[in-house]
Amino acid sequence: MSSSAAQPAQAEFDVKVADAMERLSPAERQVARFFVDRKQAVLLNSAAQIAEMAGSSDATVVRTARSLGFGGLSELREVLLTELTGTTPGSRLAHTLEEAGVDAGSALHHVIGIHHDVLDLLKTPAMGQSLSRAVDILAAARRRHVFGIGPSGAMANYATLQFNRIGLPTSALSSSGIALADGLLDLRPGDAVLMLAYAPLYREASVTLDEAQRQGVPVVLISDDLEPLVRGRIAEVLPVPRGKADHLAMHGGTMVLLDAMIISLAARASEAAIDSLDRLSALRGAIDKSWIKRGTRKK
Image 1 (tube, rainbow, N blue to C red):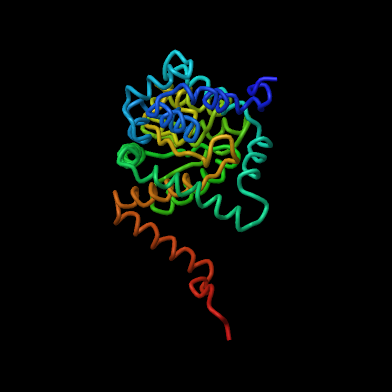
Image 2 (image 1 turned 120 degrees about the vertical axis):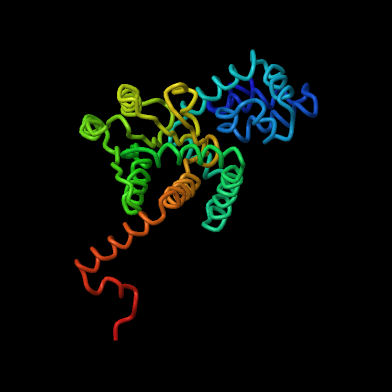
């Protein structure tokens, strides 16, 4: 039995790279390891950006893809996207447990290490520039709509709450199935959509993108793998990895990005944001005169 046949389907790309390592040059080996370790980054970045992250050159990135048997970087990306969207939650959890170990301390260190890598990506100038453009779009909108289903729905609801608290009218598009249609009725020219979505391109995300296009509404996408499937339909993408490829999805990096977005939007209109929060405090006080004392020990 070949080594490829002995591996699960989702590991075929890794096996292909491992089988080719001996015939690659040292520079190509370095890039090939990056292809395996940072699959989302390979999906979402240009050859020049991949080269910068891998400590190589864009010519070497393209050459490595061809040395691995692909027609070029685009063909390599297609294979990666198919592999990443074909895995199941159970298989991803199994891979995570295999690396994290069984005790809580090992799991903690494993997760911290993964988030450390994601935070390094969030610190890059390219991410800062993308965030700035995204904030420009959201700040200029008449109204914002935050799309997210499932775990992303919880984050969409969080962002919606915080945007409203700083005085930016926002609605959550977090219902699945036909219930989403009611939220999409509010989409109007002059609005903006912040979308948290991941491959495959499921029906709710596709319909939301279609309606945004019909209304002339720009879409800011937060994703680690969907952008290749919706290129040309979004105004800005913020490529935030959800942990490690083929492992359980982790959303810590996305939450950090959302918090940075909230602060950036508040800074664009700080007086209005502070006034809105003061009004929130007054309303809380009107509802419960003792709310400000929460957390103090009563005698």
